[in-house]
Image (cartoon, rainbow, N blue to C red; front, side, top):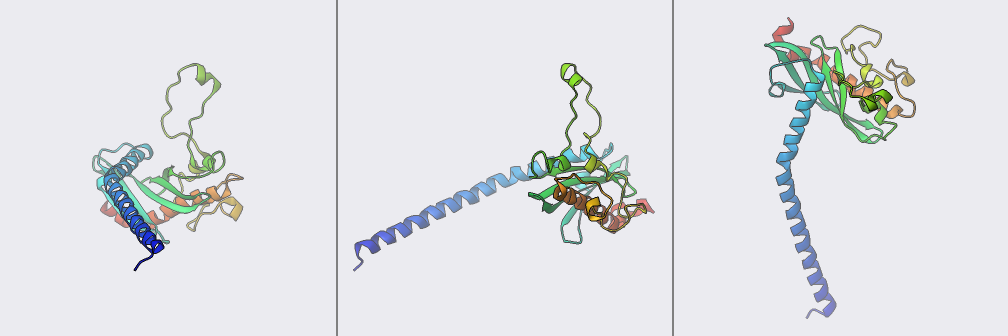
Length: 227
């Protein structure tokens, strides 16, 4: 015959099991319900980003996506932009996990010759005022601009760390060379921000990873058009 304590423990255990089952069910249902909207938001984010970093195009790059792997097995998605059937550029989405606060996501666009055109960071958790100086593009505001309406500038807001990669490529024979790029503090060529060296290294690695994967898969990307 069960004593009172054993009976209480039985009911408590049963109650906890029921609560856990209900919670698991709610979480599972929430995951199913939110999966669709999350995927739609991701696609919209990439689509908007392509319009920011690529020249004018009239195809749908989202329908012409190829996925390759970097040397560390990171997936890199490439999108091809065309104007009247002619390739005008490429863009790659990828990430590194070596930021100061963890993962940094980027979108790197390329000219048809494989050199970097532009570069934006699409997701990060870097320290505001330090790491974000490396990752963020912010419109410069002047005192006069506060008192009068100024026309919106075309192109991306400047960021000296991100902009320095433009014109470089893993296959280009220049001072940066065809070996993994490094920040100057590590004996390399790319600039960094003091106090945000880890973020600078991560952004450098992201740019190199995109450029090197492009070079490794140049033929698959360009196809017969590059012959």
